[in-house]
Amino acid sequence: MSTKDRSVVLASLPVVAARHPWRWVGVAAVLVLAAQFVHGLVTNPAWDWPTFARYFTAQSILTAVGTTILLTVLGTVLGFALGIVVAVLRLSKSPFLQAVGWTYVWAFRSIPLIVQLLFWFNISYLYQRLSLGIPFGPEFVSFETVELISPMGAAVLGLALHQAAYAAEIVRSGVISVDRGQLEAAAALGIPKFRQFRRIVLPQAMRAILPNAANEVISLFKGTSVVSVMAIGELFYQVQVIYGRNARVVALLMVATVWYIILTTLLSIGQHYVERYFARGDRR
Image (cartoon, rainbow, N blue to C red; front, side, top):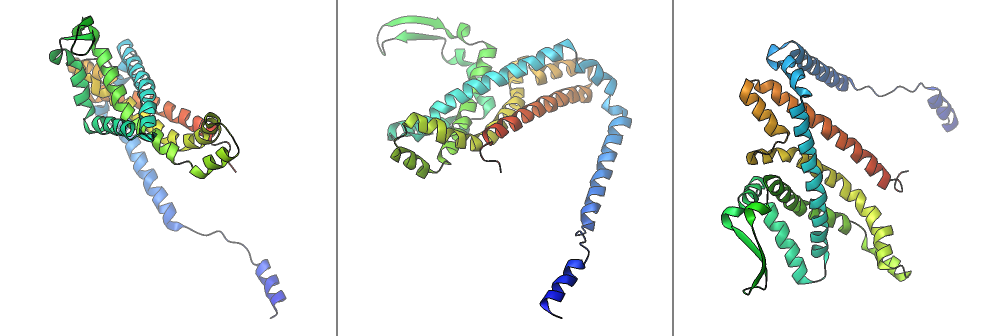
């Protein structure tokens, strides 16, 4: 058979899609497990859905959700603002500034968040009074630390300082991921450094920064539950207060869980659109 005849025969053969029987077995197994889980949620009275429905939109829970969102927003904004400064220190050509930035990141990543929060909450125990003036000299202004840092202020301060250490590394990793040859080419063309950063470095760095930054924000959102040790009325603390009174532990934990899922999902949706915006020049 000639090559031409062989090509005609091959072209006339039907195209059959590849079969993946084990893939369908896996899908069926997952669907069965999911159906069993949903069936248990619906039929098991221990989940106590009437209590869940009663408290899910209760005023105390909604207020606690607002407090959780406020802590997340303040911790994120202040944390990333300080994190950018620390990242600049770490990227500096000065060995001293690099050492300062590295020390900050090392210190605040080494100390657990709950320890930092309790430290700031009890700062008045260590320093009853702070003052401004000449070092080892006269004081111009002094104030009591009890009046300076409230429980909410201590929570925001602790979350922001903790978040800044991780934000600094996220920003630094995004900046150093940009090919330095592009900056050298831009410098050769006479493009000013600020424009190099705004038009070349930042758009490319954001593609590397955003996924990790969004992950940190979501972690911070869930991590605000740690401030419950300071008796601040965020979501998890409020849930604990309620089930401490009525002993409906599972139902109240589900209230907190569903709220965390809803807000985390909203953050993930926002992350998707922001990432798509900064990736518009990279799409094919």
